[in-house]
Image: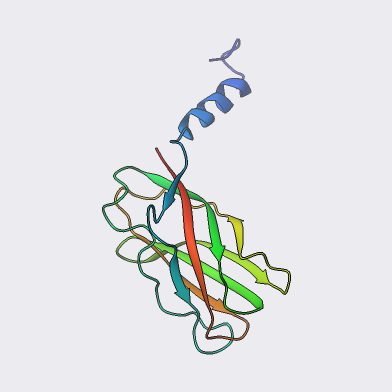
Length: 145
């Protein structure tokens, strides 16, 4: 491990960390289907109900994590916040924000960093915004381990 037993070999530690984070090529959800529509609640900054599954239970038969979200066709200018949930208990795993303005170009790619999610976990979303009653579409990019 180290030239001296009482020292930590940083190269060795970083190598071990990197090996624990080796994952598959990027995958997309939903795959071969349109994005999933999410809706905000009725009032400003009111979380709407859960979306349909973005990743259905039983679809990803390996540990996985989410790295990116593509948000498209937000229904109006304003500030939005999206919350991702995983598993049967709908445990929160990520939040992201974006703003649509008059120069918005139909979609935005947002970085996301979730924990490593359990095998076969479903993922769905809820959304809120600064006015309420809006919609947007979402796709997720993820990796398996």
